[in-house]
Image 1 (cartoon, helix red, strand yellow):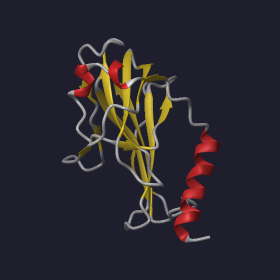
Image 2: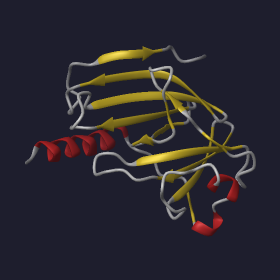
Image 3: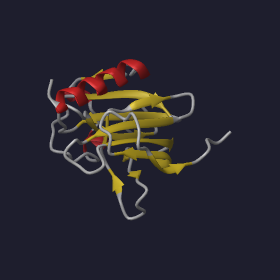
Amino acid sequence: MSAMDEVVAGIEDDHHRIGLQGEGDVLDSKDVPETVRQQVDCGTEADDVTRRAFAGGFVFAWRCPGNHANEMKALVFAASADGSGARLIRFPTPNPKKTETEISNVRWLPKSGEIAQLFVDPESRICRIESRWRVEGARAVLTHWRQTRDCKGRGGWLTLVNRAPRR
């Protein structure tokens, strides 16, 4: 088994361990609201879009180009299921000058109103990043960010953000 195969197997194990949830309502391309379409510019058509009630509104998840280790998605928040008031969610990073418009391997945490991601890049100095944001409408607030050079995530973690959840 190659190093990359081991990383992918580890991600699959992580997905099983954390119990990735269902994708919500799968939308036919013709049913994706124009207001949502206007928010996303990741180079894919609206043929793999889902919608779920989340954080006091609806989040549309649009699949973007990724690789075998990272399923990338752009997330759009709307006040209602018809897409009214749609806005692309921008995800801050520990670098105050950088935000992400797409995140990987999304995990939905509805009880806390948070979205988590797991990102793996074996070709980068930082191989694995785990992060979490609290969603407040179309605004995402970074609450956790940790990273390691260990692609399997077994050690060497450096925590850059660790904010207590709001009560």
